[in-house]
Image 1 (cartoon, rainbow, N blue to C red):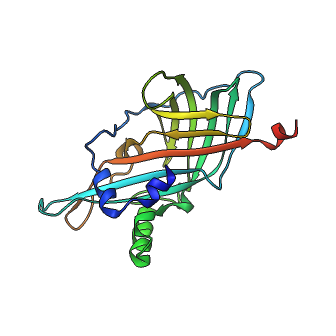
Image 2: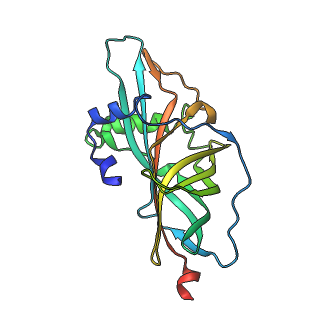
Image 3: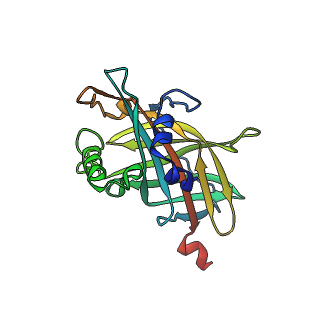
Length: 226
C-alpha cells in the first residue's frame, strides 16, 4: 500500500483527493475512554522505520474552468504500541511526528515542495510549532466478517489539541514476529480539528483530508526477552 501511494502520479492524486467517490468522510464524536487489554496480553512496539500515515488533500477554484489540484504524502510515526491477546488486537496508542510531514507528489520540484510543506506546517494548517505531534488511542475493536477488511477500529484522534473519536475499517494481522494494521483510506473533516484556512488566490481548500494508516509493530524488548 505504501508503494502505491508513493508511486501515484500527480494526476492520480488530484482525482483521488476528490471528495466524491467511494471514500467515506468519518463522523467524529466526543473522545472516549481508551481500551484496556486483558491480563496476559502481549505488547508490541511500533516499528517507526516503516510505519506511516499516508495523507491526501485538495482544492478547487472559483474559476470553474480550472481543474482541481491535490497533493499527497506521508507522516512518520514517532512511537507507539499495541497489545494483543490470543491473536486478537485489544488496545494500542501511537504518535505521529509532524516534523516528518512530507508532500511526496512534489519530490521532483524542490522549491515547490519546500513552499508547500512550509505552508502546511504553518499555523494555517498543522501548526507544527504549537502541535508537533498527533496521537491515536484505540477505544474499541470489532471483528468483521466478509468484505475487504477484517476489523473495525474506533479511537481518539488528538489532532491540533482537539481529541475526537473516529471509527474506520482495517486489515489487522497478528503473528509471533509482528502485528500489522493497514486501514482503508478514509476522510476526516479538517474543520472538526480547528483547521479553517479557506484558501487564497481564488482557491478553495477542501474540508476533507484523506488518511490511510500503515503500521507495523514488533514484540517489545520485554516480550522478546521472555
